[in-house]
Image (cartoon, rainbow, N blue to C red):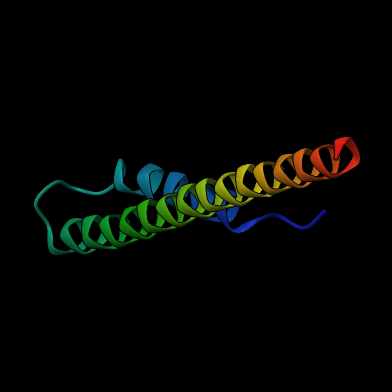
Length: 82
């Protein structure tokens, strides 16, 4: 089964955090690892934000569509009553 980007990113972050635990604090290698993890976390935050925004837009579109359907039904009923 193909993994989605969130799963892959979460796996990568977890793996890097585990590796970080084996490094000596304060060394250049440790600092580089922390910078890499920070970049991965920033990307994760960006992706999560984009997904939330996309979901919100989809919900807004659905509500607007239902509103238009309701208005159309109301106009049909008004026309039938006339």
